[in-house]
Length: 348
Image 1 (cartoon, rainbow, N blue to C red):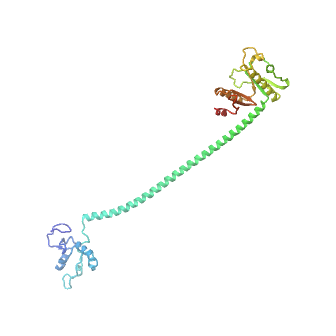
Image 2 (cartoon, helix red, strand yellow):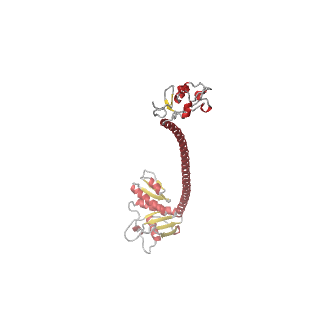
Image 3 (cartoon, rainbow, N blue to C red):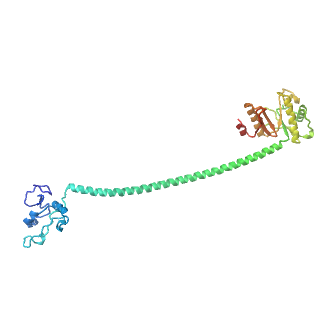
């Protein structure tokens, strides 16, 4: 039979046999030397129990005497006259608490490592969470600071642009106000003028004589004292082949209106012909000329655009009165005051 502890054959007489499970153990496996084994009596040997059976018995009889609470195997005290009554051999530790095997060592290591690994993983997870939290906090804080700086720069830029735009608007408003004032002043200064357009130009001509001839043709009487000036003016477009216009300034707007009314009646009485150069005794090819109010360059451009728009959109009438430009679709429609180019474009 083999030793239960070392699994080797029990060949000698120096062993102990458990009275419960009948397992045999070398005395060396029980940490008993030959002297101690020789001191044991037969009664002890016959009643001896192995550590495994002692543990089982201890669990069953948990309320028994203290001798079963000892993890080692105790030897009962021999009788007083026993040869083995000396104090050195009175209590002998026969075996360790547990049977030591590789399987038990492996299980114990697994348990210890599992507990240690669990604690380590918990600590590791906690450290990772704290690190991630700090990292996220740092990154988010940095991103928020960058966004704040960019937002501040953007708002500052928008405020600066808004201020610049407001200044431009104010300047534009001021410019429009000044333009309106200038247009009003030009209208006042031109309120006594008429303009003769497309009258052929000759060398050494007398424009006052030409105007007097016009008064005779349209049958209007104008005294010399009512004429303040009569002259040709510079071209607005120097590249144009048209002759320079003749501007006549009267002493009052009433004289101007009287001359304009006379020319209007003449043109109405001669439809399709109107005033021509031969009416003024100008030699050469006969061409038509026009008499109108003296407009500013801006109003002239607007008048030209209105005439073109009237032609494109079949408007029948375009005329000027007191420096204002009017259009009419036909006799039954109302007059339209053309104020600006933008207003003219919105009509269609």
